[in-house]
Length: 293
Image (cartoon, rainbow, N blue to C red; front, side, top):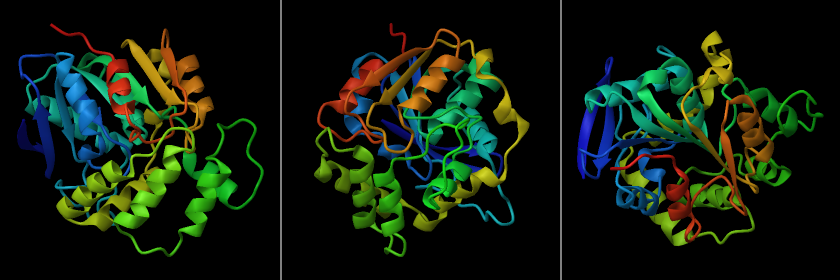
């Protein structure tokens, strides 16, 4: 295991490589406001056992990576994708198997569309098509307004109620554990000790925990690059989606499968939007598309 800070323009990004550097690489891209260490250790270790090296990293404004003055230097999703390319460059990887979760899955789509030579295979976990803008959908749902029938579904009422009830709750590990439990869903067991330990580590290692909220502002900087049809993706694609996902319901995974040529949709029974149920990290690692020596 090696840690390295990678330069992306003026930024420094924390990265970590686990496994044999001579093996094919899997680049794990975390979701919004999430540090690289939110991918469970069991998932990473199972991938290494499968014969790959794993690279995970902290997005800008999370963990040990650079903090941005967002008002002066706003950034969008394509900027986060450029950070991912910089990481591949720093590790001298012409391409990698790219696996992204939630917002990380949208970044992974961007890479597969706009940097196809860098993506050996694509695994999209618990995510939505990159052209979908969840902001207005959430706002209508929170306001009790009817959904647009032409749009993908909003989060579940239970998740939206938790968000509303949590307004004003002091940030910290306890608040994060509570939302992870809601995101887990009610079907699979929730490994609270593992989640709490991971989140305590996140809070301890974060340069500025409040900066992660900038990811919620990314929607202000949208470009036509997000509207490029997913039908242009040529990388072998696996879509992994839980049937109990409270944020991006199964319809989002189905929309991805319909849009990406020859994509395979794997529905995981009982899975929500996080991966801290006993046995689930290993199951997901086995579904991530890789080629091994």
